[in-house]
Image (cartoon, rainbow, N blue to C red; front, side):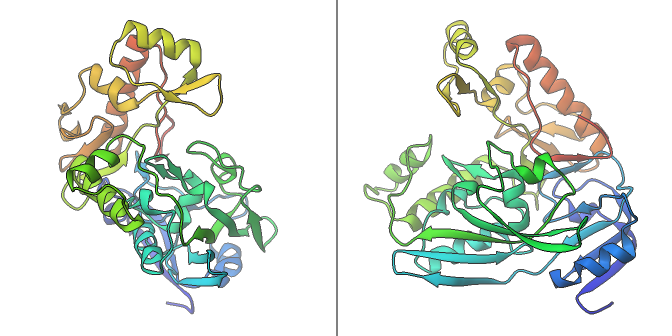
Length: 346
């Protein structure tokens, strides 16, 4: 062990990915202090190599072993930087638990993140994927992202605009390896109207007899919904939603809705596009609850692939490809995976 980091050679990554699939890495470096990054890149990351950045392991699938060094930022400090009484800026280090951050902000009397409760993983992964749920995306609340740029050896600060957030997308995802996220700053209100319009939340609150919910009550409702619908990775290996909800041209969505009554259609990013629920498409193709050996689809949610025990990442990837192929064949809609795939191409 050295100051600020720990090194593991020939690292076993099975316990470091929420699918629980077997995988190894030639080198794993756990980093407590981001200030150590320049020295670590100079020492352990060969020139021209992009290391694998590992957070909670909840948004990736190891279809094979990692053939590059793996870096895991563990620093998880949370603090309020400034507070004018109506809004506060919160800084969270990359290694902090995302769900833990959401709960902590509510404890500080801040709101805005409650719809993003119970999303697994770390803060550092949140802006990369531009995580979103129940009508809220983290990019809407990001104030700035602190990063390390290996090519220049510099620490930089990127504004929300610099991050180029889009649906499940960002500058970080489009240019993998260019930056290492070290911390995220969020600008959060103390009082704001809660968002309860997304399917399920209003019904959950109504069932509890809540007409005018607080942010904490929305948080509790989201936790209850997600706990019922999504399997716990500690019980059965999974990475949550495996596919993105596809965005299609408005005309195509309208034609599909006419041909398939009951298909929900949601607004897209602009007037000419619409969002379709991948779970509906997959379930309509008969995949919900199906199993091929130990690789399967959750009985509770068609969007979730699960490892019943001994599935390999390659087997899960093969199943995902079969699912996407059947959706393409029946509906003419291409599905894209949410998790990063290591050791294979989609």
